[in-house]
Structure formats: C-alpha cells, structure tokens
Amino acid sequence: MPEFYIGLMSGTSLDGIDAVIADFSAPNLQLAAHSHQPFAPAVREELAALNHSGRDELRRAAIAANEITRCYAASVNSLLAQASLTAADIRAIGCHGQTVRHQPADGYTLQLINGSLLAELTGATVICDFRNRDIAAGGEGAPLVPAFHHAMFTRAGEHRAIVNIGGIANVTDLPGSDAVTGFDCGPGNLLLDAWTQRHLKQPFDRDGEWAQSGVQIPGLLARLVADEFFRLSPPKSTGREHFNLTLLEQHLHGDEKPADVQATLLALSARTIADAIVRYCKGVTTIYLCGGGARNVGLVSLLTSLLAPRQVRLTDALGVNVDHVEALAFAWLARQTLNSQPGNLPAVTGARGERILGAIYRP
Image (cartoon, rainbow, N blue to C red; front, side, top):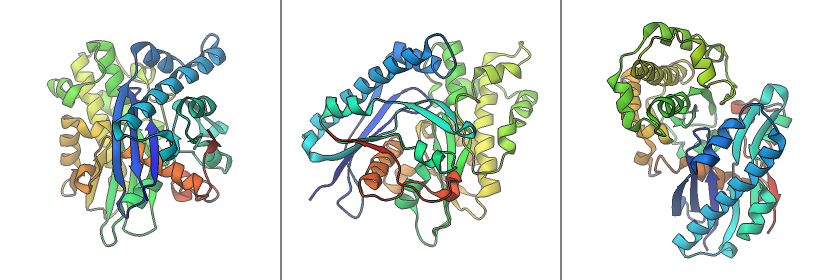
C-alpha cells in the first residue's frame, strides 16, 4: 500500500519552492511527482528584506508568512493534480518554511510558515517548525538534511560525502557506518546569486558563465576566506544574517570589475567546500553534489579540480535528482515525526540527544 508524503522546501537562495510527493512504502523511496514554483519578485524582495531588522517587521513577517503559505498550498495542489492523488492519500506534508533569521547562539531560529493555514488550504496533515526542538536541546538546529543523507545514501564499505549546495552549502560525511557528521561549510549560491542580481538583474549566473568570464582577485579571496566562520569547528551553521552583500562590501576596495568579483565568489564557495571536505571528511573517496549549485558547471569544475583525486559526482548517479534532495528530506522528516522517530543527528547539530522534530497541524 502506498505511503505518500509531500516535502516542501524553500531555501536561502529565495529562488522558489521545490516540492515532491514521495512514496516510502517500497524498500527504495519512489518519487511520485515533483515541481518547482518560482517566487514572484515582490515576494522574493520582501523575504530578503525580512532577513534584516526594519519598520513594522512583525506585521510584515506575519503577512509574508500567510502569503508564502498560499504559495506552498498552490505547490501542493499542483503536485496532487500531477500525481492524480487527493489530500486524503497523503500521510503528511513536511514543510520547512522560509528562514528569515537563524541565530542558534541566541537560542532561536525563525522560519515563516503558517501551519494552520496550510492545513486548511490543503486538507492534509502539516508538519513544520523542525529546527526549534533541536535548538531547545542545545543544538544548532541545522543542518537537518544529514539525517536524511544518512538514511538515503549510506553504503557499507564506501566512504562518501554529500554536499548540498543551496544558498548555504553543507556537507555530510558518510563513512559507511553510523559515525555520521555534517555541518554548514559556508556560502554556496547565496553571494553568487546576490551579486548577479545586483549587476546583471538576473536571478542567478547560469552555469557560472559570468564568473568564468572574470579573473579571481587573490587579495579579495584571502580576505573572505579569513572570515571567522571558516575558523569555527563543527557543529556550526550559518545563513543570510552573516553571509550577505554587506559583508562582501566590507572587503571591496571599490574599483574591482564586477565579473572579477563574481569569479572570486565562485572560488570562495568552491574553496571553502573543498577545505571542509579535506579537513573533516578524512578518507572520503567520492563526493556527491546536490542542490541548485550542482547545476553550476563552473563551480562543479572548480570543485572537481580542488578535490582530485577524489571523485566528484551528482546525486543523480545515486538515483536522486539534485533538485529533489532537500524537498525529499523534509518529506522524510515529516515521516519521522509522524512515526515518533528522531529527525536530528546530535553529532551534526550539537544537540544533547536525539529529538522528535516538528509541530503537527491536523486537517
């Protein structure tokens, strides 16, 4: 009998909503439907603005949460139609929400989502607010996807690493046993996209072509790599509140060519990911990439060079499309919650122990 869950993910890149229907009834997870819904420019701009303090932000955040929830509901209804299913066929929706503040050092993280409204609009059980339980237990609340990576991609006798390159990049070390570790390693697409949007008025640098037209600026790269975050030992997590254009501008002299800055930002993402793997994933032989950055040809090429002789591949080679991994992770996390199973890995987040994550909203 099918066991359908929906996963919804909108990440720090602010590019839109990735949505999947997954069937967990078979030994190997099956994808029943998937979609990507871009955010309207006005929604994207407001979500970006809410990452920083501003006028009337509590009211604006509440309105934005309702608006993005309607976008989530539209994605759900589109998926159901695509798969010829109804809400009654779905065990639960796992929805990450949109992170606008992530401050585990201060004891909180904030994802915009109205779970009650999503349950009303879809007629399905909704599970959200996955991160705060881990933070309450002393953890970072992130990254959460390594638990899914462990369940999905571990293979006995093979030492793998999974690198999710979203707005922020995170790495999961899978040594082929239960000794799994993982952490945020720094900016993935976040700075690259923001710089592209400012100078090209485009959402992202397709295939890294603009970056490859420029020349790396060694001094700028050295200043960025010296950032305090890269000196921290795991567990660690980060977000837009730290890696943003304001930080970048502090390191610019003002006379740099925009394309050269983009080339340097590409090198920053690749180098910090590679450094994290070399330092913390000792003995890894194959690195599998997922997330939007896995489609950046320039970034993948540079990573392949920096990580040689290790093999760099896409999770497509493991049977999971790079664009679906994060949404699948939140479908899996919803299943863990509904089955009263833990969803965090204390070795990854630093929590005091395993915890059942998320709040449940019944239809």
